[in-house]
Image (cartoon, rainbow, N blue to C red):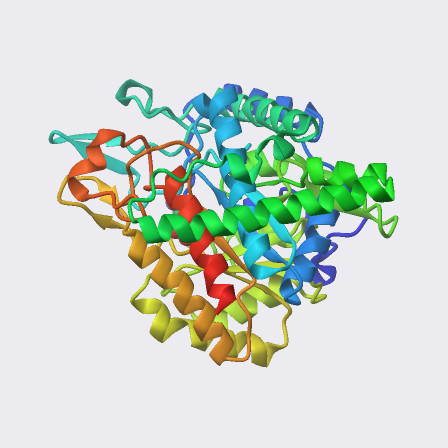
Length: 459
Ligand code: PEP
Ligand code: MN
């Protein structure tokens, strides 16, 4: 059996992170209950397989070469409550619709990765939250504690609940995707009535019409060709699952030594999701999260923000991808509309000089959060789109290419971000503000984003 990192092959185990400094640690009062939860998790079957994980890595390799585009999106904090038919269907619907628009615009395959079926744990800037002058432990995500004030004590049983909610979500995703759900989302049935400006609505409608015609044409060819399996491929789509690798007790309990179907080699896989990323607060080189991630074979994301040192980033790449495997590392930059202009090129140049193969993705959400006059966290659609536009341009100027985007979004008509073609205003934020963490693009704003990115490609 090999760990991913040959230099540390003899030292790395799924638990070797325990000897390193751990950020965002959760303290459980009841250690017996904690141990029981961990040993239960260790016995439960994998949620995803090496075949699927390696397939995603292969697709990401193509993205890194500019032959595919990554669309990653979902909630900031997934709740156990979202494990229900409608929220799951709505999220898949928006991701599939966005991916079709992007496919039309970019003319390359779109890789869909949902922040879903495990995106339960949240890093917090402070472990304490003050409400009406009283201090409470912060809400750290459904797999740690509850949002209700009387449920803020970490409960290890929630780790096991996280597994079962992930399993139920994944099961429903697989079942509807294999039952023609993608085909049911016919572009000519999309509702564009939210677009306030007539000219913009007309422009979107033209894209949708062209998309519908293309899909109909493809179906006709497939029918004439009699290819059963290929016409099937229009009905079903790939959908991969991802989450932040934050709760290492959970992640390491679901880490299994399994055969890589491509090489026949045994490797350590995290079987709780296809793709894992390390957050901006936990990516220190010598700390526990990077130690854990260095030994698993899954494709990994690294959040890169204005506080990342470019030299440290190269050391991280060396540690997480010493064999320089293509598709292994996705760099998810999150600078904000203002800072991307002065930051991004430095990192692109450092990575180019290092020769490391990476997939470049723009997360235009996390550098653009602000407090609204309504007293809630929000983000401006214009800043989000602006950061994506700048990412495309800066990559191009540097002789690089943006390979994907990463959004916080939901398939529901929430009111959390302002702007977009529905021109949502600050005073409307309280109409349907649902998020328990960061503000997400709603269904309409998400579709807008896809249309605008597609348009970017038409220039
Ligand atoms: C997130 O993706 O929800 C998040 C916390 O991002 P970051 O680590 O980049 O702040
Ligand atoms: Mn977030």
